[in-house]
Length: 155
Image 1 (cartoon, helix red, strand yellow):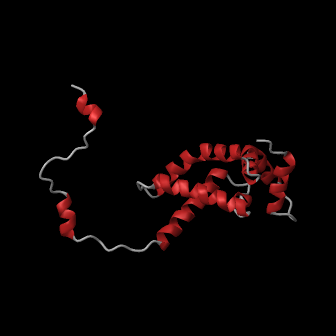
Image 2 (tube, rainbow, N blue to C red):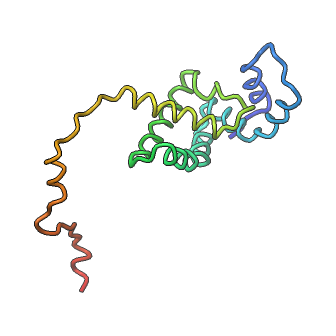
């Protein structure tokens, strides 16, 4: 990935250019140095860094979103989140805002939850289906199954 120490230091200093960090904050940053290198790699447009970031955090985000708001389209929301985050980072207002004093996984989850929440608020409300339409879904005259030619060919 080729991330330099100077780039990591520059990322941290850009968060609070005139403020120093306490001993506790320095220890917290030191503990998250691998995440810091990964984020700086993404900011520097390294494809390997983006791939690694997604690999490390997609499963955590999937668990978080399924716990917070179980839906069938959680995977789509996460894919949209990654696309939006990469676009925001390219514009200069994405991963640049991550503060290594906070766990990266929690920061990403908060961004995802915010995105999902705002999409729910902006979504148009749909009228409820009439009760008789829903009742008809339960009435099936004959069983319907998918037929797969390979399975049907096996005796």
